[in-house]
Length: 294
Ligand code: G1P
Image 1 (tube, protein in one colour):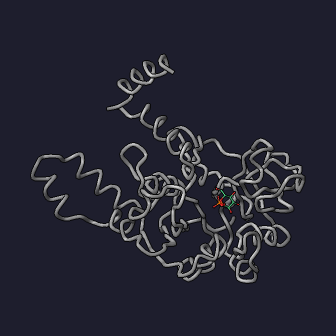
Image 2 (tube, rainbow, N blue to C red):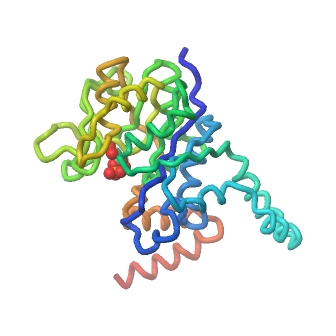
Image 3 (cartoon, helix red, strand yellow):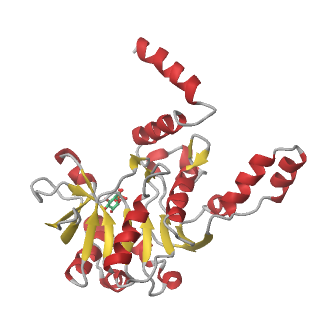
């Protein structure tokens, strides 16, 4: 049996240009979905999969993220004196979720390079990668996407990544996997293409930003030359891994939102608010009224 996956890398060094001007001074990972920064959904997904150490790959001006997972004595003290115990407990729970370790990516050389920046902390261990632009919501009775991947890894010893089917018109937005279906529905990956152009692949199996890798991927990343858009692409190293010890792709149960996109971000906000005990009924009423006017 393969060793347990205890570490996760979350790349968070992007400039967030799609959300400017909001992201000029606020990291995009801190933009709220209802009342929680989007990054918190990602960290909680990782923790539900048994991850203990979260390695944030950061750019400049991201100290707000570190502060979010740190103690705020003044705030906790004030809330406590005001008798807001539930709120204090929630803040304490959040900062105790995992060990948050932060490392800088000093140059924006691509996703593959961002993941490689985590190597000094991950070492040779297997690890997960979760991209912050994708929010995956698993109900309590469902497995989180990262958990599905660690489960496959721990039973087969093979690196495993999440995949989803997309329409042809969206193939060029994602890394696309090609391979052969196994009897359990997973895909034995043969090739990974970063954002293929029209007619470059028949596959519609896209990568939604959840991965579990054996430490071997670092060696391939180390040797990966700049690819698509002149960036060191994680997908190029994944093809090498597929040709080496092997790579699986698996479907997942969770609901997914493309929160890196303005519309996806709004959809995530509306749907999460419809599940929020304080907001659900008044928002539903408001939306019904609004729908009649549209
Ligand atoms: C990155 C990856 C791509 C993946 C996508 C998922 O692209 O390079 O393979 O499918 O994330 O969100 P980006 O969207 O950051 O350009």
